[in-house]
Amino acid sequence: MASTDLDTLVDMGFDKPRAEMAVNKAGGIQGALEWLENNQDKSFDEITAAEADAKAEIDPNTLAADLKPGEEAKSLVCNDCGRKFRSPAQAEFHATKSGHIDFAESTEAIAPLTEEEKKAKLEDLRKRLAEKRAGGSEQDKADKKKNEEIRRKSTKETQDIKEDLKKKEQLKEAAARRKEKQDEIAAKERIKEKIAADKEERRLRTEKEKAEREGRTPPVARVASPLPTSSGPVASKPAGAYTETRLRLQLPTGNIQKAFQVETTLFEVASAVTQASGLEVRSFTQNFPKKVFDAVDFGASLKELGLVPSASLIVK
Image (cartoon, rainbow, N blue to C red; front, side, top):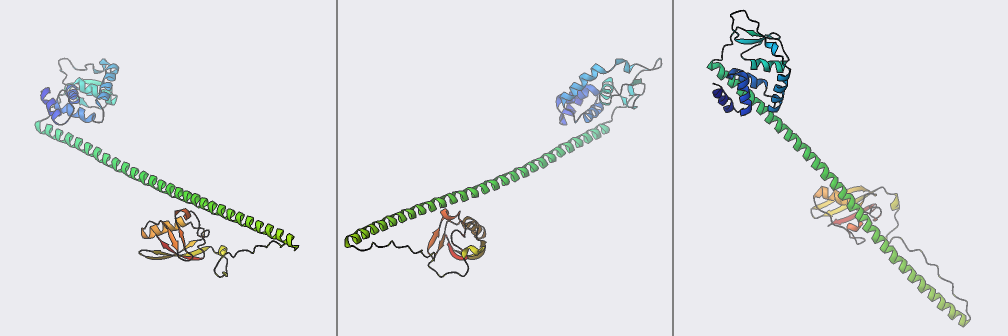
């Protein structure tokens, strides 16, 4: 009988050690099902440890006989809760789980399960197991979905940080190249000024020596007149007074007219064009006066590049 009950429980999906323990504890399919149902949330190691502790603590006098002469004990009853048990193993398990220690023998026999009751019990336990597994599967899906959302959010934040750092690095590199170019231009200007000063000094020395030989008064050094700052007409309002400039940006797909703050860098203008048109900007060309603004100039502001109060640029 025990072998058949064990095979039935194994066929239902229970591990053989757990099913074997249930059959040994209960002595039949009914008690085994109840034992498995009561212990479905415990691991086999936890059950084994609890059994060892229970054997060390339960007093054997707890199950002392309390029958009249000639009566035969057919079951055990818990005097604490009134529950009846077919075997001492079931009573021992109940004591371990509930903490009840007051048991007595009873002459009342516990009727075995009918075949229909066994099938119903098995079906109920099978449904509970399926529901538990389905619940665990749904929880796994929910946890997986949540972890995926966290991963995506973390990835997007990381990408945004990398993009921001990349833009800052591009601005920094553009500013460094612009400064290097300005320093180079300033050095060339200083060389030109030095050459011009040396030339003027030689001319004055030659004129002085000639005048001394001829007995004339040496010529006076000429005072250089200031160079005009612009070849165009003088504006009624200085460029430094403007806080906003209007740009006409010529793209292959059409024109864009937009106002920018004068402190806006050319790199920010390029980013705005890319966002509006999807084109990657490599340079801007100004027809009059003719000038090309490339990556070296992207770190400079519109005010510094002289694109105030308005300008027309060809985007390339």
